[in-house]
Image (cartoon, rainbow over all chains, first blue to last red; front, side, top):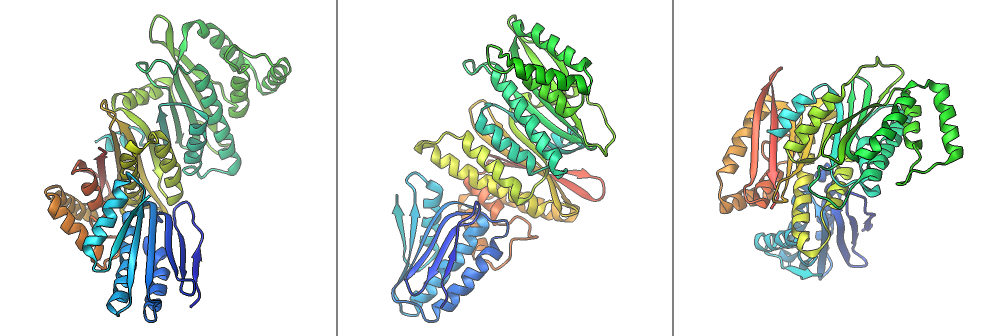
Length: 124
Length: 356
């Protein structure tokens, strides 16, 4: 699978989805006007990847600022990671947040509650 | 609500931007970006406007008294009306400076174009600096670039100081010149002061105009750990509200028109308010959804959020989407909203969030 490497912009995050290197990361700001269009190719890629996923698969998310539309799309990506777990492969999400960033922590905790796949919260 | 009333006051404006508060070089840059994102004039007009705004800023910085916070903050108003651009700065000056300023402005306003150029070169050569820097060169430049008299007035404030109003007008060559009185600007000034507004922007709202507002807001919040919570939530709500104008606003051509207001109350709490017109039908369903959300407790809001997060519905064209639910969740229900009737089967939708 061809990896996805997107450079960050003022309103979109840096994305690395690389099966061979085993790196799956979303880092930075995410508040594009149209979150659906931005995340659609990432979701498609991850769904294709899930059919023959690495064991283990770890998705790391570290967002500085975001909009609700992006969170909804990130949630969909996390759902695919859960699918991978259900297929019998070890998988988890690492949710990074800055100390005192209550909002990002709250979002991580919500995803922990809503999902079966482990969501590990890491403070920086 | 403020957004409806101010939209009415500024109804003839294609674009308005008002800033009250600290004047420094960093702010100058962000405000120029904000101005540029809202004006679709020819490139040279935008360039000239940016230059004039920067000059006005410098002028205000020169007179700024940062030691006394009881005094009214300086204000900068930029408005575009029927192809005419107006830039108004309102700030305190010491009474001892009035005579000199008045003399210089009156003399400048008597000069024609070629005489102004002469005065400019003369001042440049002499390079006379006033005590606070600046050589009157700024004022000469303003007259040169606007090709219009510099409107000005000094209004009594205290025994030592006066309110100095300086108003520039620039008309695009293909437009009919119109006039705007100092009084009209003072009326806007009084509205801004009495409503505790620190930033107002009226015009089109596209994604490009989001970043300068975002940066200004970010720069206005002190950067320490304690504030991080407010800062993150504030910016989260800010992004949602600005993108909401684009999502729900009626369009003029390809542009989403609206008004954005940032205010700060006596307890130093920020409020964000936006206003824009919506189709009546859309407005009615939005009002129904908002009324329902306003009656929800925390648990019900969380439930609705989870439901929206998991639903397949795309965001566009919905009633109250996930963004609005998040506004209610992140400010403990401190959301006010209102719908006013407009002609042509439209409603003016205002929404205000108090950040805590």
